[in-house]
Image 1: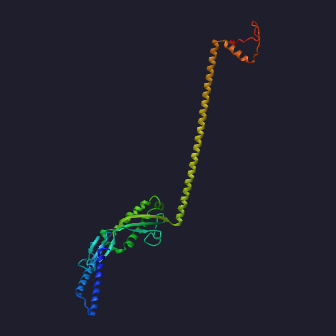
Image 2: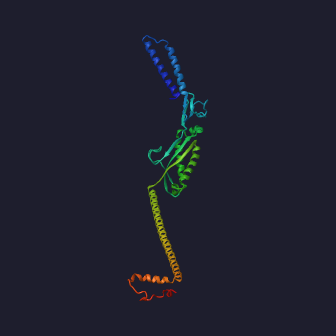
Image 3: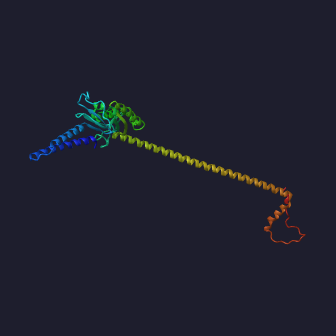
Length: 342
C-alpha cells in the first residue's frame, strides 16, 4: 500500500469517526447526559477529515514502471486541458478535481498466433499473407514494444489507452503482409526468412516510432501453409529424399566397384611379383648349376681318376662279392672315362 492510499484511508476513518461522535453527542443529549467538549471534538475531527480528504485526493503515487498524465479542468494550470509534463515515478500532489491517467512504460508483448490461448485474440489470430508467386502463407508473430516515456503525453492525446488495438496490431499485420508479398514462398521458407524478419523489424520500428511507441523486438514465430500446399511440399521432400537415397546407392556401388578393382589390381600385382620372384629364383638356380658344372669340369681336369671313382661308386650297390687272382684281368674293362670327359 502506498502513502496516497494510506492518507485516503485515514480520511475515510476520520469521517466515520466524525459521524460517530456526532451521533453519540445527539444520543447523550437526548438522555440528558451531554458529552463534555463534544463541540471541540467534532470540530477537530471535521478539520482532520477535510484535510485528509483534500490531501488524499491530491496525492498521486507513480510506480517505477509508470508515467502519469494529468488531465486538469483548471485553465490556470492547464490551458489545453492537460499538464505538459508527465508525472515521473514517486509521490506527487495535484489539485483535487484533476485526474491522473497512468501508462505502463515497461515492455509489453502482443502475440498473433494460430494456437488458441497464445495471443491477445481468442482463436486463430495468425496473419494471412500472399507471396509474390501467389501462395498463401500463415504467419505467427510477436511484437515486443514499450511506450516512449518522453512521448507519453502525445500518446495520450492521439490514442489514449487504445494504442495496442489501434496502433500495434494493425501496423504489425499490415507491414507483415506487405513484406511477405515481396518474396516467393520458397524464399520465405528457407533462404530469405532472416532477411524478411529484419525488413519487418525495420519498417515496424519506424512506424511505431511515429506513433510514440518504441519497438524492442519482432519475432517471426512460425510459418505454415494451406493443407494443399503443405501436402505438395511433403511430396517434394519425399521425392528429394528418394533422389538422395538413389544417389547414395549409386555412390555406394561405385565405391564397391572401385574396391573390387583395387583388390583385383592388388592380386594381379601380387601375381606379377610372385612370377618375377620365381623367374629370379630359376635364374639363380641355373646360374648355380652352371657354376657347379664349371667347378666339376675344373676338378676333373686336375683329377682324372675321379670319374673312375664315381663309376665304381655307382656300380658298387649291384656288385656282389667276387674273388679274383691278383694277376687276373677285370672281366669288364673300365671305360676310359677321362677320355670321354674331354
